[in-house]
Image (cartoon, rainbow, N blue to C red):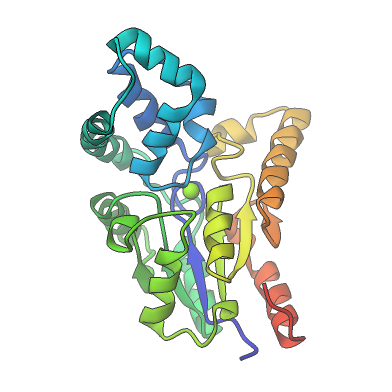
Length: 267
Ligand SMILES: [Mg+2]
């Protein structure tokens, strides 16, 4: 085994939805409906997790826990998480439709990767119906992955490696070091590392920079640099083997990884 066999992309902030705006909008709105203020930073902190786990993580935050108790008269319960997750799903579906634009020509990239003999797969923090919406929209825009996995069909989401490992089984991967996970959050990196795979973090297009393409381009240079550095630091700290600005430019990193594989290195 000396070559990569599959590249596994995340969706929001990696190949669609520049800035990973859709989940932030839906999370903030969900809590606003329950008179609890969740700001963008709080909504972004645990991005990448399966959405049900993400909602729980937000509720576990000290300030939000206090707010919930003040507004609702008691601490949140498991039943509240069920109810919130139930309400979240149609809300996220609504928001998602407006944020399903591909960040770059992912179809062309997938074509080039396939010509190198690579499979193109995806994982996500979204549920299967949300993923199906993205798949339909991406297909209209010229991108269809060979395989797409959601947490609800793998027994759980990030940071568990199960979606990646189900993909490995489905395509008959010869070794987990023949796979690369590419994503925009520390949770994506953890997922890849837990699966024994190489990991590439993306800094400019994702959750860590947190801006639409237009807003990111409009930033003054020092602020743009500051956001990129902050994103890169978070992804490196999570253990990413490489950090690049956009998944559009992943091929140089893939080549570097193949050289490391050829020289006997493991992730
Ligand atoms: Mg993402």
